[in-house]
Length: 293
Image (tube, rainbow, N blue to C red):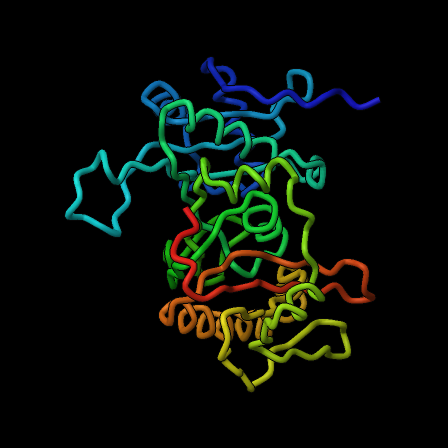
């Protein structure tokens, strides 16, 4: 019988050492990309969040974030721009697909909400389907910002050799949208629902002989308020088997999202079709939704 996973704040230097080691196991051995004990302690003691998932005494998941200020409106005073920036979220490989990332984010939301802060932001690679499923679909975060090569050349094992393009997501933790998602008040919608509501497919994609999807040269930007953008269901498999195809996906989606965000669209949902022979993944974008905060 599996032990129940316990979610709680890390407190002691010994637990912070476990957090150091977890980062190595999740992201690789690059010491320059590891948050060290002294920094984790500083974050946790000065308004930030260092929360772990424990299986018995073993740390198996970690989320770290700190207070910051929105840079979109620099003319406003810092108090009016206060936000919590979620810097890392990681779960040991053998503990993934057990909902631990979701539990860590919910605990982070509770801690930040207790401080009176309404907004949590973070970045993630928009080509990572499982991350999109958690961030957009389950948690109810939204996105209207795409940053090309956000972190320059990354050296950790998961990202080395890849351009570090990122979505910057906004998680308005006290909004009706988020509270209803977390409460399960709205039945998840599938691709058929969005198509019946008039959502237009932006990028036509096809399967190659290996079962990998590849983007078409034809992109049709929507005329209506709803749009669907397909991404690979497993970009990591493509990166290992066909790096050139993975780079083609990066450039293809970079152009699409940059264009659509510039023209007033916002990522509001995500669909993962797992029941097919070859799974498919789609972002839903809506026009004129502002921040949904």
